[in-house]
Length: 386
Ligand SMILES: Cc1cc2nc3c(=O)[nH]c(=O)nc-3n(C[C@H](O)[C@H](O)[C@H](O)COP(=O)(O)OP(=O)(O)OC[C@H]3O[C@@H](n4cnc5c(N)ncnc54)[C@H](O)[C@@H]3O)c2cc1C
Image (cartoon, rainbow, N blue to C red):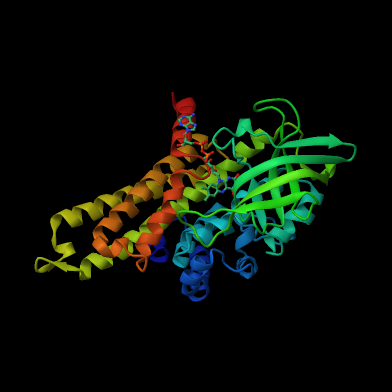
């Protein structure tokens, strides 16, 4: 049972959500999935996919209509994120979600009309590719440890430093960049809109990864890069808090795609178990297999419900920090476990490159690391719950 059918069980989804689900699913199945092998091998999907996603409205679902968005709520983001699994391309899904839900919501929330017109609007239209630049070679989990500097010089900021593991980093037109404008630790970090055609900017390395092959991930460097001071987002020195705020949406959408991706894999594995024979019966004939599958179904359902509950809190404007950290932690761990068990149920076939489950297994390994590790989620929860 795929997402579109499963969503009928939840009252929050009506006819319009079903329509969006169908649009995304059709696009995935007709235009993306058939190219999966080629784009994974090429280690990049074509740039025009951003434009296709924009034309379907997917890059600005919650953004205002005057900026080219659809002006809808989080339930439509859920529908989009869940249905993207039909592309079978986790790397492509991640790249699009960086554009729509990780690098740009903060521009909408704290940017002014200059930022909206010059960065957000082209991103929603798929004319500009966005990246989020936070992680550095010496600072990942510890965001307060970043060293890239943005020194004020007259009407400009001069940027020096480097970032790593940046999704969309080899071809981004702009980066929502965290840099140090003064002070140490949490204080003194600011967010800036950084155009990548700025003199002194370089992609120093395209990184090879374990999975998510069709998305590009880069190490980038800034050498005396001069950008206008008006590219500062919000207030100087408050960047750390904006980054933490922004992580909320990123982590929630990550948890949703993890559950949906693992569910799709489990659905396929059930079909496999119904046809694969051993000892005179199909695998479903073994009680141990059936019990394993319903256990995994239960854990996925629990993860989904936690996400849906959190989405409702976000829509209602309630404090959802605790639930968001729980979503990222629980769904990440469950999804990783589910696809691991799926590989096992496929047997030797599960280890073959030709079998989707082996790719999904490699891709899914990222979920407990990217956007905040499971350990950091436990740290956050320790502070929020104890
Ligand atoms: C494919 C990919 C794409 C990415 N895309 C982006 C992007 O677009 N933009 C961006 O800015 N970043 C991006 N990242 C970076 C990602 O968010 C970081 O890798 C992640 O936050 C972890 O940071 P780190 O790699 O520096 O690990 P580290 O912080 O070095 O952690 C190493 C290990 O130590 C553990 N650890 C650290 N601190 C603690 C603690 N206090 N208690 C217990 N354990 C701890 C961690 O959990 C982890 O297991 C991406 C990463 C990957 C792999």
